[in-house]
Image (cartoon, rainbow over all chains, first blue to last red; front, side, top):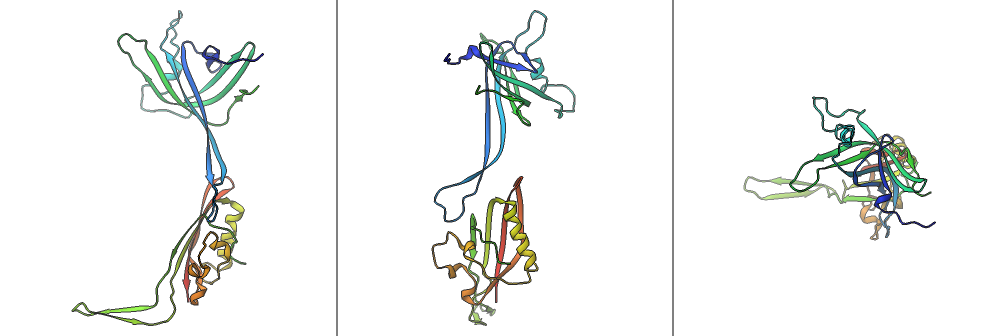
Length: 145
Length: 125
């Protein structure tokens, strides 16, 4: 059956567990291109370089009935005490999913949280905004089937 | 082994000069003596961006074949590709010169199997 996807079909998972109160997410793939144009050519030509993945997500800052805050595991990768900073183990497994009944269209990647912000303003909900940078190959890319 | 027949992605040419010696008096007057009738010391820098490692190796092999900066050689049309003027204008042989390496070829690997090579040549009599 034909289908147009909407925001209601979007799911963001952290380590396989669906995150609550996700407002939006976006994932982007980039290909670095290496120019191979030589003198005398009239049209540019390129060789493919390396690919990479990045994106961002916005979540409402939300505490469930078990006192678990939905953004804790994301924000804590960057907002932390101590002098160690971020280590190579501070990665997260993110799955971006578009649901169609029982079919899932997934992009799963391992990423570093490169930006995290949270604030508060009068007459507005508290939101956490994160940006991430993928590292390594995708674990899943089933967006076309 | 001839210089690799590849068209560069960038080329910079310095046309050199005739062998002139300048004598300057304390008054500021200048006397110039021309010691030869051939222009020399032309410099040619060729950049081959994002070529295969196999092609990059051709420059290293040629540099080795030329015993580094010791042996002179002539440039083929590949190195002058994209130049629509007279090929002699950016060559060395038209003035009795030949090119030799001014510096070792610089190879920068940009990704697996792909490198950028910069070659610096100088024309000598």
